[in-house]
Image (cartoon, rainbow, N blue to C red; front, top):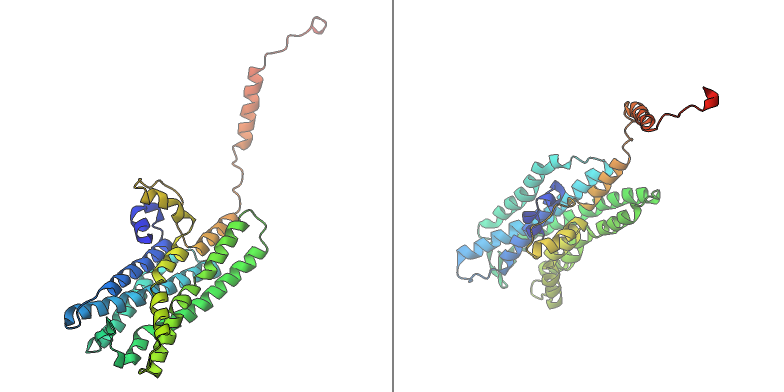
Amino acid sequence: TIVLCYIRCRELRKFAFKLVFLVSLSDFIGCLGEFMSPPEDQCGPCLFQSFITSIFNLSSVLWTACIGHCLYRAVRHHDLDVEKYEIRYHIFAWGVPLFLALIPANGMYGYDNGVCWILERYAWMRFIQFYIPLILVIIYNGIVYYRVLSSLRAVLRTDDSSQRDRDMETFWRMGLYPMILLFCWFFGIINRIQNSADPDHPSYALYMLHRSLSSMTGLLNCLVYGMNRSVREKLPEIFCCRSPQSGGEAELDGIQMSQARSESKKPSEPCAPQDDANEDEEASSEAARTPARVPASDEV
């Protein structure tokens, strides 16, 4: 849905929403890799699936850290020119997964437990390639969003404007951002730790929770990051095959709030110097339209 909205609606192609698009794109390609089922005796397709899942699953996680940094700069430091970080974000979110995916390419990938990835006997490599970066991003997002939400809470406490209700909705939505990775991957992390500690006795319940919740990552990223008001207004036009009309521009919720606050604090423009002249012209035209009074006989 997010990918389709970004492609179809030009007015949604703001930089912050582009980050959400890249998260969704990584989730989409990563899911395609998960759905592949190459035969275990074919090395080429199995290696291809291993690369796809390794790169794009981790890339999706790292793009959420980029979104957290973007919101942190906008809200805490009032830096609305976050587009200057785009090249760094791409190097980080694509370069790190690519580098980590190349490390186990020398014989560590293979068919194991119905999927092509790092073999079970190289469990330590699974942590290096995916689970340790995942844990670090969960911690980073938690710290960043705690600071962002603390700043927003302080602003909302002193706000009595009509914007308060909409800002409160944004505030609670942003509170869900750091919870997505924790919710989707908590049991996956526990399952991998249990597999490493006792590989001969895997837990079926942990494995099912791992696979079920981790597969919801793309859906929850779409609902929480992408389904803001601007995107929801575009959905009927996109799915009803109508040409999208111009409308609001999609931004991340925190950036929308920062922009609204900045605009509200701008001083009003001074009155133009020709205002007095305009008033004189209006008075003169009014006098011209009023008929002259005829003097009475006793005044002659």
